[in-house]
Amino acid sequence: MSLNGQFADAFTPAQVAQKVKTLGVSKAETPFLPLIVLSLMAGAFISFGAMYYTVVMTNPSEAYGAAKMLGGFAFSLGFILVVIAGAELFTGNNLIVMAWARKRVTTLQIARNWILVYLANGIGALITVYLVFASGFLDNGHHEVGVTALKIGLAKASLAPTEAFVRGIFCNALVCLASWMVYASRSVTDKVLAVIFPISAFVAMGFEHCIANMFMIPLAMVASLDPEIVALSGLSAEALEPLSMSGLLHNIIPVTVGNILGGTVMVGMAYYMVYLYDRD
Image (cartoon, rainbow, N blue to C red; front, side, top):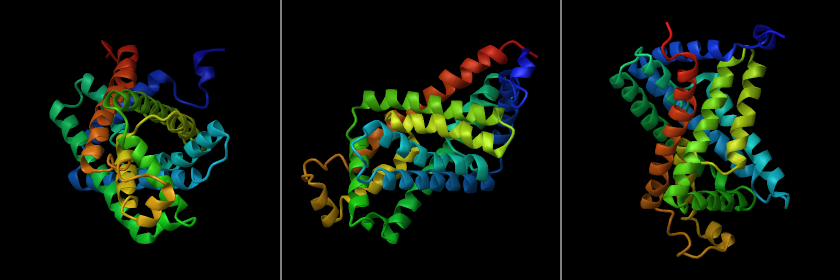
């Protein structure tokens, strides 16, 4: 079977590389207002996926692997919304590096996109934290959902920086591979399937996503202020110490750096070297 026959229902990797390069230019040139609005939406969309994940992981069965896989499928909601509904997500935009490497995008343009999208993603996530708190979401299941949110965020804030960094690398390699396969897809169904497996995999394997953590750790910080949730969790005040601003930064900084390396080097630059380097 020919290569074209193998990819009859999808774009080939070489075609995807060209699409990513062209899309990188478009993303880098997006005007300020649409870029900010779409980035705020992405922060909220990822937060929706994290909320769904939190509910699914509340009182899971003893089947650890199956529970994590199911939670990963739930978490995929956020990325499906980004891809299908349309939004600008920092981690996926790391693929703009391919357009930059081909000198179609300047360093200033890529820096502008990444900084604005990153900040707006974070603001969107934090706004969602406030709205989630106001909605009483943490009280669901007789506060059990709040306990789950507390423990998820605490585990993330307690990671050693090296662990957080490496988990960030693996996470965004999978996120950018999901984006790559989305660009290879022709239908909505194809795009959804392209998202679900890489995203659910990174969640099930415990990898770290900086934008998701901008929602999950602050949500845990809010949950730690509720005496009923803390009492039900059985955690001491000492155990909850990582849930602070310093604990948040202790996670977010190494995870962000890891995400950038995973997306730009393991996926973006790797495919650039294969399909775009030294070519017309």
